[in-house]
Length: 187
Image 1 (cartoon, rainbow, N blue to C red):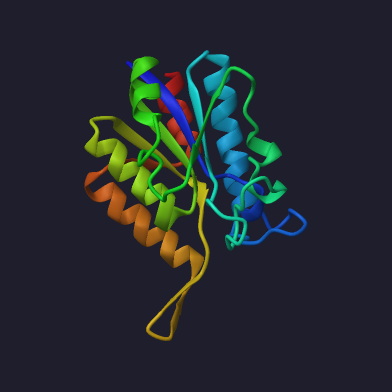
Image 2: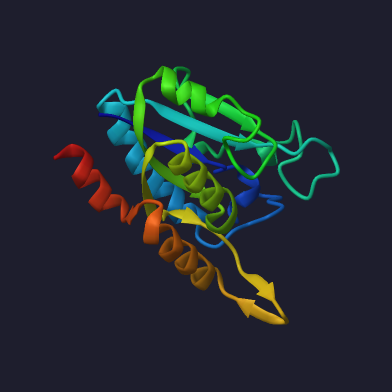
């Protein structure tokens, strides 16, 4: 079975360590370190890696504005010249892109998914990939999100992340740690 690595929206604007980040998340640096570990395994095995980069359509976007350094893929998970980069304008990485066709062209049947934000693009991407027939593995410690507010109450990033990982593991995918997924892939 061909397994591909799907890296979603690890872009500069999400990194608190990036000067001028417009939407810093909680724990993006650690999450991308784990994603980089998975990238090493995939590169060593010559398995396909797909990067998704979100870009809003207008310059007045709150983050990921077109042609800005904030919208660029962070150096910690930068693609090589032979890795596919898909640019999206929607939350769902498959909507209005050729991602599904690119995966199918490489014979990918299973995806390891990492990235940001857990409650938005990761959630949407996992659900869409599963609905399209891909087996999905999600590295929970290679994903990041931020605090949210609902009904006047703050929901911490950790609570948001855990709630979405629990929901996705209920029926959409196998949610596990980076190290456990690496052990599974290299066994």
